[in-house]
Length: 123
Image 1 (spheres, rainbow, N blue to C red):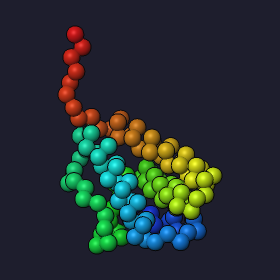
Image 2 (image 1 turned 180 degrees about the vertical axis):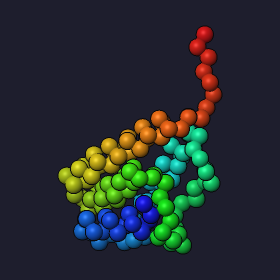
Image 3 (image 1 turned 180 degrees about the horizontal axis):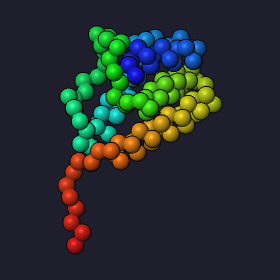
């Protein structure tokens, strides 16, 4: 999923008045978190670093989580929108779905890629 696809999806499914700049900042924060807590802790392929997304970032830039785990972006944006609007029940529903998608993604990474670190001695 690209930045533009994530924003278009959430705008189509959730009525909101949140600016594209705010949504881009939220996506940048989420991918920064995924990069530091998932990518930097595992032997992931093609790690070119992550510098964040800004106004100059093209909308066709791919996000870090691949399909089918890219639903994480929809639920994260919906959660942030509902939080900004003070809609607690809708925030909680989106947060539950976001957390389930995040756990599924992290489980997949843990099964597919070896974690970094030192080998422990058990004697």
